[in-house]
Length: 245
Ligand code: ADE
Image 1 (spheres, rainbow, N blue to C red):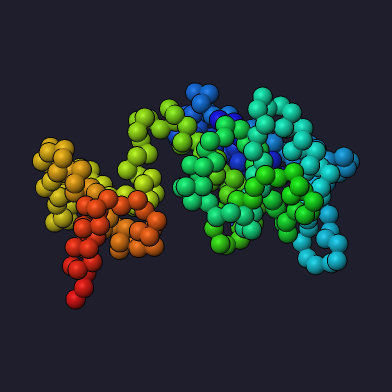
Image 2: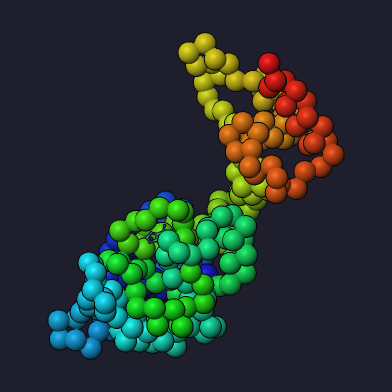
């Protein structure tokens, strides 16, 4: 999977995507991340890429010519047409199902905005706007890193275990079951017996129940969309009865 991230701050993007699992995947060649400086596409002798907004107002706006040139020039370097994504608070909200949908692509150009926004005409060269939540950040660098990270972990071999992300929160519409590691007892609290039993079927059953109860108590909204079996529904009904005073 390849990402070209267009930004005024390539070092920032590169730094957050160089450690741990993503850093290793880059070294192994499973993913390629190029942090591209938008200023390299400016025709201006001061390498400017922004200007004052027409109509007045505070802040600066990215100009169309250097940004569109960056998108078009980088596009030419891909063997397959990349999906062009602009990180913006006006975009489609990012969630695991959108990550899974987007991950059908192997090539991306991600544009990071800054200041007050971008010239509206740039959007003619963008396939999709994506938001990482209903709040405004100072720039698109962190959102771009969030998206690149979430997409990278869907690439086969990036996570150590092939099935690494199965059972994780949001994988199947539920939150993940609680995890425990050594010691067996901490501050008087013991690891649930079933996890020490070695009985795989009981462990799996316990985990499913806990995933359902975690979701019910922390994110009940997710249950409306989660694919639930008849057994799941029975467990939930029991949990709800227990919750009532
Ligand atoms: N840029 C600034 N805020 C953002 C957000 N919430 N999501 C994506 N890009 C952004």
